[in-house]
Image 1: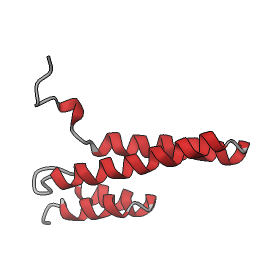
Image 2 (image 1 turned 90 degrees about the horizontal axis):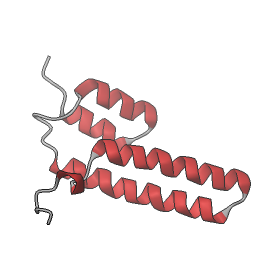
Image 3 (image 1 turned 90 degrees about the vertical axis):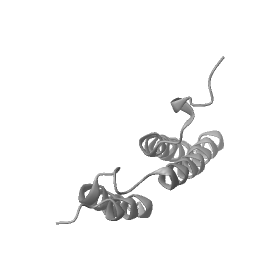
Length: 94
């Protein structure tokens, strides 16, 4: 039996970002090929990834977790507001 403390079931920012990239790729393939199934699957994966990232962000302590300025800049470049916000919150005082 599994315990209630199974870390594999905890939302993960990295896992969420990976799932979002996978979903974006599937959606693009669907758009290029005209496959509604691929497009739909990609959009569903992206939506699930956003929810995963939000849940992981809510559990994160910016004082002890995060990559600070690097994460903020990557978020800005990638257009990911959540990543930019999390990076800004986890920046170390200079």
